[in-house]
Image (cartoon, rainbow, N blue to C red):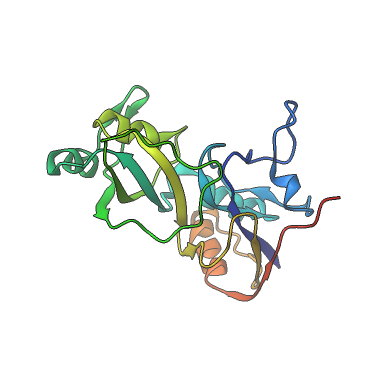
Length: 214
């Protein structure tokens, strides 16, 4: 039996349990030390982080070769032109190499919790929102992608990883999901398929608020 935790990471929270610089970390919200992040989310980004106590699941979720989709709402500076969106859709090249094509759509401003501190806006410069889906996980990839096409990111919120949405979790809240049907396939070539089958067998969940700190 494996455990997944879906966590809504607030802005300016480090996606790890310890920090030498004494910044706010996952430990301020999660007392469970037997789980580890499956992938990362930047310190200045918000939204869904998945943690698990299962190493194989962690690898499947975070490994770029698995190409698990990650969905973001992205607030950018300016009004995107079709040419800029097409560049993202076709796949742009960053300093560390070409990106896979992204799915990108111009959307209305989504209903979101207020960010603290709020996003700083420049007078007379409009902002827009994009729904962007990628299947990679490079360092600050989404921010670098939008900047490359002339649309600096102002706010970045991850709302979904694979089939797991952030749902109605507020910043700092988390939900536990229990996965059953243990992996016992000896054929390593079928390992990812078997793990994905386990993911589909989530049978119970509970939503929890962050622990109180004295």
